[in-house]
Length: 203
Image (cartoon, rainbow, N blue to C red; front, side, top):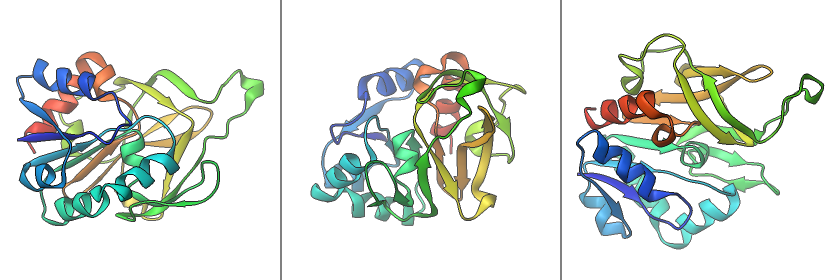
């Protein structure tokens, strides 16, 4: 079973519908026991790092997520679900993340004289750096949909699966063992996004 974790900060139905579109029965989860039972776990997220990670801790989901990852079962983080995997986030202060991956989540800084804006919103291109399981069979220069004002900076650069240019390169997806995560939204990325979700279902 593919489980999509409901912790009150994500557009769960769009993720669920996207999985259904590729023939996968993804269920929305709302308990620690649900997390224990699922074969694959998806952590989506929209909103502030502080509020999201605190909600996970308040509900005991933080350790359940870590246990799932440590068991070797596939895990997909989307947007904020990627950012929270790291040690620390700096949105409205300094907040401890889940610490699954070493590194930090920092504000996106761009040269506004180039006409660039933050949050980074809209379509942009993936530059694949490593053959991540969820990026297989994607055509070169695939475009995906972003909505974010922060970016992750991994300590271990080998986890970077793809980068994207927006006034400079930033990390757009990561991969380590059974962990895959995207800064973009596969569920909003049309044909390319559906292929990514299909790939995750086959991990």
